[in-house]
Length: 357
Image (cartoon, rainbow, N blue to C red):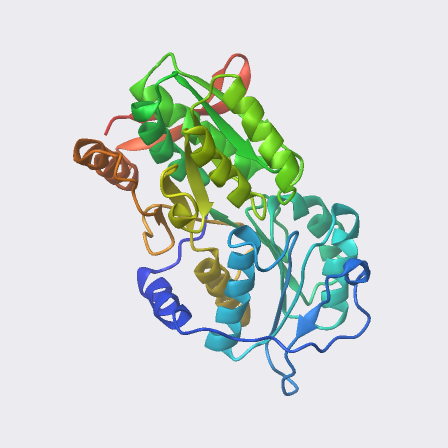
């Protein structure tokens, strides 16, 4: 069962986050292996007994996407809770367990593992540090001191599928992401289902590059999708996102932004963005840990919290009629007259839609 935050709590975080421009000071001992490759764990000093929160990031804090959103969440935690905070960036998969363990050994109350790719490493180390709570962002891991935080990517994907299928000329669309795990699979499935609700015979494919930040690999994969006929691409990348968005503009095709509002990166190409205010969600989870109300479960936030999960700026190519249709579909999802239900398709477990907008 997913935990649901109150609207009042999230609005409080939202208002406080707007003025949060915290700079973190370097202060660390016994850095994890990731620091040896150029990513320094940093923390602010605080008095004894101060609540301590850390985040382990797979990419860089200036990517204007996933990793930056996580870093900004840490800043909100510092501002709202007066916490001592720390982070380490560019952590490779081989170094995940050590990076998480290092913060736990240093007495951090909560350690955020920023991505579903951290599920296995978190489960590996959490049992060794019962006094630290681990939160996997976009993960599936749970345990006595493990929770997962998810922003409902399937719902956002569905809305983008409705938009994309209404504008494609080739009747082919694609999904492009860094890695395949539950959150990206769900986002792709939502995109596919939304598209089928408009054009039942539309072709929607998925490609995973294996790297969220490699711009060259992402561009190559994107161009291959375009060459295969896709004229609308829903991307979820980090530091590699801008090159894909700009390539879409160069090729005269449409693309979706992700995590942050990326419309201004390529205004001619970006139809809209799947906005995920991870910073506010992270601040909420940290408060649950501090108040000892956190549970070892999956916390899911969807379109019912528009201050957290919503679509960004709409491209003018989206007609008022299409925008109104998207609004109606969103309302149906929030009201649960249109729902995602587990089903089988092609002999595989997946999700299907029930109800109507």
